[in-house]
Amino acid sequence: MVSLEGKNALIIGVANERSIAWGIARQLHEAGCKLGFTYVGDALEKRVRPLAESVGSTFIEPCDAGDDAQIEAVFGKWQKTFGTMDIFVHAVAFADRNDLKGRFYETSRKGFNLAMDISVFSLIAMAKHAVPLMKEKGGSILTLTYYGAEKAVKGYNVMGVAKSALESSVRYLAADLGPDNIRVNAISAGPIKTLAASGIGDFRMMLKHHAKVAPLQRNVTPEDIGKAALYLCSELGSGVTGEIMHVDSGYNAVSIPPEKEGSEG
Ligand code: NAD
Image (tube, rainbow, N blue to C red; front, side, top):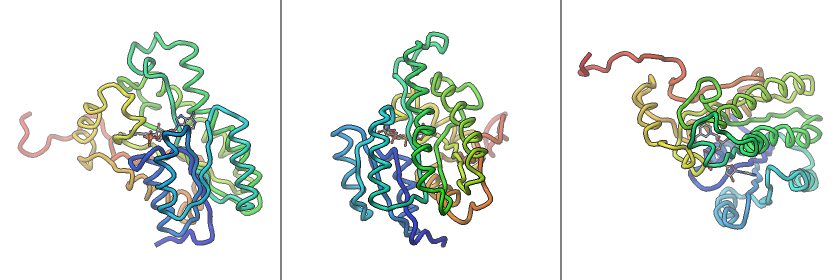
């Protein structure tokens, strides 16, 4: 088992126990990593605080990814509390529900900018504050993306465009920060039933389709994503940066899957 004893990680994007970020937090915690969390709004604080406390965390701060002052405050407090940062996990995305329902060409300027601001620019804005905390010892930055960045996926609309920009940002950040020994990667997760996923129309159909087509013939879990995150954020992934790692039961690798035994042609 890889050890993260003596390391710390700021995790942005836990909403509840079903969050992918919580799956990641649990794996990092089991490896001995000290954790800090953020939340948006009082309702989510009630969910996040007990989860954070269950893994021994006392760093639980408000942070709206669209608010520069709040971002600055969180990283400032981190510096005062821990001095340096080893791992930063960005598991944040947001789009107006209406922009995920209709025809893609009807996306509004406001909705487009909102999705790009919260789901893409926030990674860059937060990386800017993480870098000075990681520079001395090196570090690892991780974000979450989805296959809708690579192919048009029904119901994913403007979020697919945002995820393409996010994946590109991972490559540009990796190129920029490699000389500082800061690695930047993304996990492209298969669909998982979370709060954010509930905004995507016909998500149940998506889950069924993935489980049917993917080589492993099942959907992934937050634990699957957590284990891959542990690899990318620890010494195990020391040579990996700028990578978009699919953790999707192999869905992205196939087009027309082989017939299952017993099914008709
Ligand atoms: P989730 O709802 O549990 O997490 C999304 C998080 O984004 C929440 O904690 C929410 O508070 C946060 N967030 C939204 N707007 C914010 C803002 N303005 N400021 C700060 N935080 C904000 O859902 P999840 O599925 O675990 O999503 C985590 C990441 O994983 C997202 O980037 C999502 O796109 C990505 N992802 C999800 C799936 C899936 O099927 N669930 C698949 C691939 C990638």
